[in-house]
Every structure is written in C-alpha cells, then in structure tokens.
Amino acid sequence: MTHRPTILTIAALLLLSSAKAQGSDYKQFAARTELHPIQTLTLSDEQFLKADTGGKSITVSGQLRIAQGAGRLPVVMLIHGSGGIGSNIDLWSREFLQMGISAFAIDGFTGRSLTSVNTDQARLGRLNLIVDAYRALDILARHPRVDSGRIVLMGFSRGGQAALFASLKRFQSAWNKSRAEFAAYIPFYPDCMTTYLSDTDVVDRPIRIFHGTPDDYNPVAPCKAYVSRLRGSGRDVQRTEYPNAQHAFDVPLLPLTPTAAKGAQTVRRCVIREEPMGQLINAVTKTAFVYTDPCVERDPNVGHDPVATEAAVQSVKDFLKMVFKLT
Image (tube, rainbow, N blue to C red; front, side, top):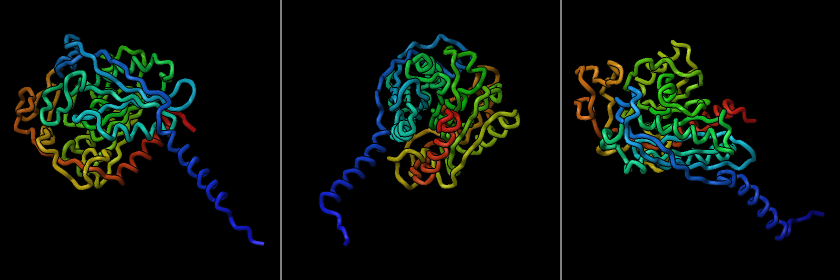
C-alpha cells in the first residue's frame, strides 16, 4: 500500500528544513557586539615616517563582533577605504562570523570628523590608518575573548595600503607597542604607487593581495612590481588578480558596470618615493609630493563584480583556515 505524506507531515518537514537553514544563517550574527574607543594620533605622513609622535591625540572607534563559540577566538581586523565603512565591511564580517571568526572593524574617520576623503585625499595622511591598526591590535591582544596569536589585518583601497605596509618592520618598530603581531596581512586593491625606504624588510608573516586587472583607481602594475621585489627578498607574498574586476569590486552596493567615482582623486599617474627618509617626493619633479601635482587625476572607475567577489571570499576563507588552523 502506498503511503502519502499528510499535510501535517509536509508542514513538519518544511519547518525542519527552515530551522536547519536558519541555524546556518544564524552563524553570521555575532554572539556579542562591542564598541571600543581607540586612542590614537592624527599625523602627517612625514611625522609617521620619522616616528614623530607629536601629532594630534584623537579617539577613533572599533566595532568588535564576537563570533559564536567559546573561549578565545581568532579575529580579522578590517580597515575601510577612502569612503569610510561601506557595505563590504559588513559582507566580510558576516563571512568570518559564519566561520567562527570574530570581526573588528575600525572606523578611522568619524572620530576625526571625516566621512570621506575621496575627493580630497590631503585631508588625512595616508599612513594614519596604520597607527590606528597597531593601537587596535593592543586592545584586541588584551581582550579575554580574543586569541592574541590569531589576529589578521585586512584592508581595502586606502585601508589596503595600510594593511600592506603595516607589515614593514620599520613601521612595526616605530609604532607597534602592543607586544603582539598580526598573523597575516590581506590587502585588497591597495595603492602601491609609493616606494618607502626598506619596504622589502617586512615581518615574517604571509601577505595575500587581491586586485582587479582593469582597476584604474589603484592600478595593479605597481603592486605586481612590489610583489616581485618582496619575493626577491624571500618574502611569503602572493597576488591574486581578477580579469574583470573594477576597483572596490567586493562592495555589493556599487553598480555592476564600471562607474566613475566623480571627483575622486587617484595617484595612478604618479610615482612617489620616500627620498630622503621621512619625505615623500614626486619622482618626476623631484619636489615634495602634494595632491595638487599634475599627476593626480580624478574620476576613476569603481564597480561591483559578483564573480570576483565570490572567488575572493573563497580564497580568503581558505587562507584563514590555514592561518588560523581551523578544521
């Protein structure tokens, strides 16, 4: 005799399926969220490079989303780009929480009375976010729910530049007073137009860079050259390039087609060098670099690429499983 499922049976199965789906989705929510003040400095790039602590004392903030789980957990620290905290910070935080990894997002702008520096990059020295990251590292390293040996630094655009160069031993020695180190560095589409002194002398931690081939905001070519120099010095660095990905390709609220970021400044035509120590010069004019230099252009393109985003998410998750020794 054939037994047909009753309406009650079907309803029960649907409820069970829904509960399982919700159980999976619920992992993306933090078990606890905390807001932390970060005592830091606002500095010129020259002050940063000369380890001059005479900048303006300022308080920025960080949001810690603690993943579901017991004990001390790994954390990814996230640094935003020139537009402040955007939708990609939430996207990545949810991915990490699903993995049982906490997320700490630094807001380096609000405490400095900024919302964006896209159209006027001179409003904040580009290296300030590195100091913020080191100060935040000190907070996380002492947090009872954080495994201080498993903190990774990840940044995007301006924040990607910070995540990339925070690996320099010279900067660590001058500014990292936390007695902790990042376990790895994950810069997304960073600005690699500047060459710093001793910039191949980085800490012994892996660096993974993600970039789009058509990026005309922060072009990939200088990052390729920098990666080659790092590899030549025996560093653990890899670069992943996506053939159709525009700048900020992982920002889900951006248009799917390349769209000009109206008025945004880009140094894509500039060659900037630290020469002598502490001074950034325009390598063409041999004068101090400023954002009024002719090489500074405007209106670079941005755009979301779901395919590149999906691939990048999987690559980063696989990398973190290895770094954090997750099963």
